[in-house]
Length: 225
Image (cartoon, rainbow, N blue to C red; front, side, top):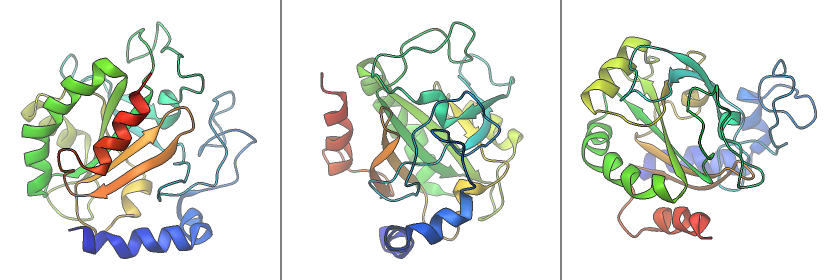
């Protein structure tokens, strides 16, 4: 699977400006993807989807904790998880509840049609979330496609997915299809480790990360005191 994604990642790494043109508009200084998000703190670029890039402040529609409420959709943006001091907290009125913000964000892109995504969601993500969440990591699942590749997932797809897999972490869809469009035709799942103090992509892999792999090593390194 990774061989199908590699050309895209290399292209984004080598031609960052071209990749950024796909999803990036002019930002107010210090802000993220949405120029209307005045007052929302977010790092400046360079933005992209390669290791070392700051991931743009993508805005999604999703469920803050489907295990508790699988019906109330809220706006979710990556700036929600931005934790520049490493010790910030979600506000009391946040849909995520009043608690410390994560020091690491594990962003998982999945698709309804994807068999390995189903396996990962059923067998792997619950175990890894239970292990890493208490240490300061958060998992965010982005359901990219329906049962048809390249067709954006709907709210009903997300409800069905999170109910089936008893998802107990934030899950979302991308109605604008900005982020999934960068990976159209590529293999799913795609997993990213994001340092929430900088919103830089630290690791990215196509497929399910192997236990003890560099993906996990880099995730764990960010969780060290």
